[in-house]
Image (cartoon, rainbow, N blue to C red; front, side, top):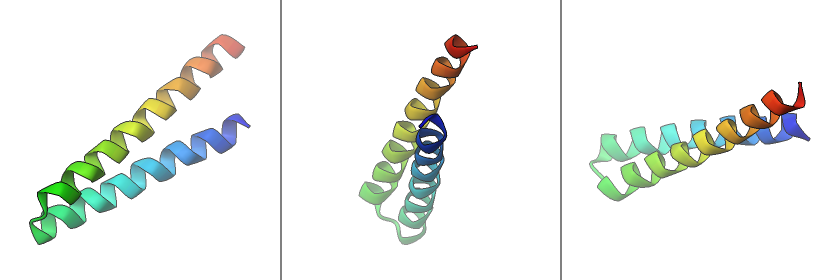
Length: 57
């Protein structure tokens, strides 16, 4: 289960990075902001999983 969540976090981060880059390329500030938000969501999910792992061991 934890591995699945970690994969979701990485995918969310990657998707956000692509969206942010695409937004910058075409000059779309909204898309850039959405990409940053998705990356932040992925970062938060990843941090949550790391905390879980810390307390597991």
